[in-house]
Length: 454
Image (cartoon, rainbow, N blue to C red; front, side, top):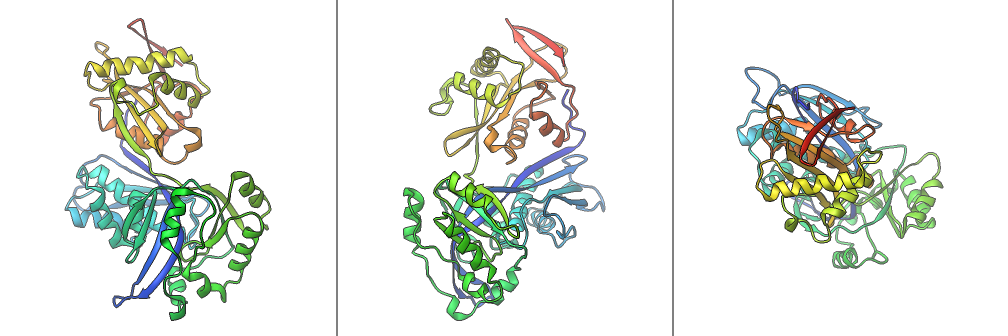
């Protein structure tokens, strides 16, 4: 049986690049007006929280009971109230009047800090999403963006992710379609603080350099990118000549363009194809760290209870085939998987509570599938069976599986039982979510429930 001994939630926290960055002028309030295009990429941290329950914490219990940071870039990340994650939880409480549970926080840090990739801002936005989910208040996306903008100029972008043009301080956002770009990040052996980068700006570094209309046209039509600029490059060149060396290496090795991201120190390069990118990656000098990545369109979730509501181009047969491919190694035959999908839809068409397919789609392509159905067994404690869960292997590690599970649990009542076969990669997902699992294989054969323990 799947039982949740405590509230556990996790979320992916992606990095970003600035496709271009024109710093226009310094404002009276000390900030700068800018014009930039943000792109989320598939390099991501993972933020997890756990609590004894979803109820507001009583008495004087601390908001953050513990704060652990792990991962290749976890060293030096503050675990006190100065961390943007902590500040995001505090801001959510202050603005909503809703007291959160006492939280144990775990951040697995994959995004280099001081690299212009927005890791801290992304973490803050992820914390707001988690607070919104566990509080039960469910603020809208626009309301979360307003809160995020109070935490930092880049934070608002990460509430939606994908692609957006940012003006003002960067918090005035216009969503854009996400181009599919093969990218290579190159991170030197030093970081650059945002304060240092802005302090290096002189009046001749400010002003509009990028033709944003040409950039927007290229994002829709593809081809060779137009000239892209970053106002910090000239400002930082004297202190960090290595940045110019990195750009020169990348353009000499097939990159269509290479530019500093944000205030640096990371440089991103756009390549015409994966082969050229990977060759450049392998040829990087040893003192530079390379990270192969790509742009990350946002994921949307949808519930389907009948065949008629399935996305265009997706039939039960196609979904079953994807499930069978993505769950390998597996025990079910393709025919078993199809019968399971058809049974869920048949029950959904009869309006049986707890029978639905939950699909995660990205750029009109299904990248995750969860099948839930009522057990219908007399005297059987769990009311629902999580029959299938699978994520496109190309999208694993991006939090899609956990998001599907959490969304599904919001649409069922009672306990949940798991159909999970030996070797299914979802085992590790459930372990991370804090479930205790008795792994059983549940099948409906000619309408007769049968249970076999692994």
